[in-house]
Length: 61
Image 1 (cartoon, rainbow, N blue to C red):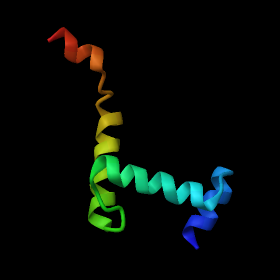
Image 2 (image 1 turned 90 degrees about the vertical axis):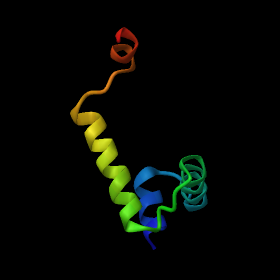
Image 3 (image 1 turned 135 degrees about the vertical axis):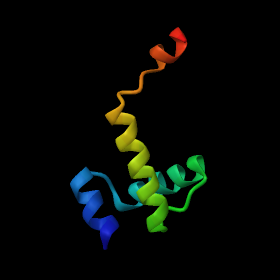
């Protein structure tokens, strides 16, 4: 049900969305079915944006 609604919002086929989510899970080596993991990823993303992390600043050090 959720895949169908999300795929309509993204204007992509449901199976495409499922495949992309599976690829993200493979690449990150996570299981997005676990709420704790989704929370951790969301927090990491928020912190990344909050601190405006920039690779070029890392190279200066």
